[in-house]
Length: 244
Image 1 (cartoon, rainbow, N blue to C red):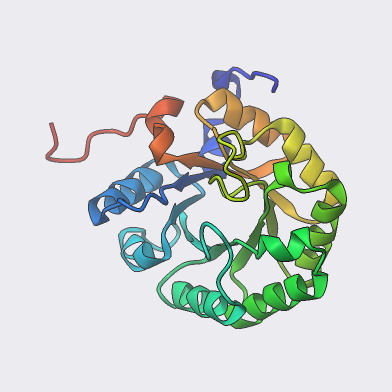
Image 2 (image 1 turned 90 degrees about the vertical axis):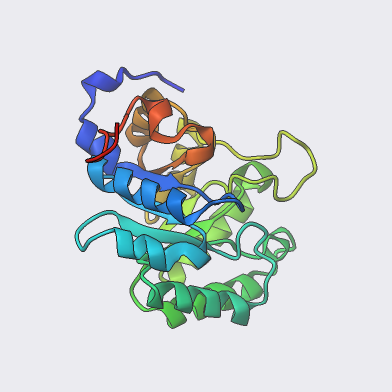
């Protein structure tokens, strides 16, 4: 990936592209409050939290601040369609304005495109106008599979495609966890015929990486709290009032 000096790029542009993400099973309410405070302070694009924590996240972010996003059927995508749709509806009711949808990868791998279409259409029909992102595993899918999945997502009214869940999803291989790269972003743009916006996720730990992904065409970049978060990027929040 081409390195870019972060000081040469607009920090506001970088911040607005960042999705500040924490999907650990041990995440606490205090963690979510801290994430939201930092996201507001830096003008980030979104915070991404487990669906059970959407309501408190929305409460800590005022109107006009970062979006509240969550992941539906994380991490495996194997719940039934009706369960996924219900999880999505509740998340929207509780304040989520963006949903990252993990599809049933077995359907994609088997070429059961009608099943994928039924799933994505039901979720879109249930959730109105919120932004929907189809989360794929590009390292584990062929170009043909990615292209067909993107075409179906477009037909069903999805807005984004993402390259990975960031979890060892379809293999016990420790190297199977996806990562972001300029090449992956460009591939997703090409295979979606530039009609889906691209979210890049996995292994983003520096501002140079964020900048390179934006230059490649990513509209959103996931920055994971467990990989050091904003501090790893060199974006250290100011101390809040009353803190030493």
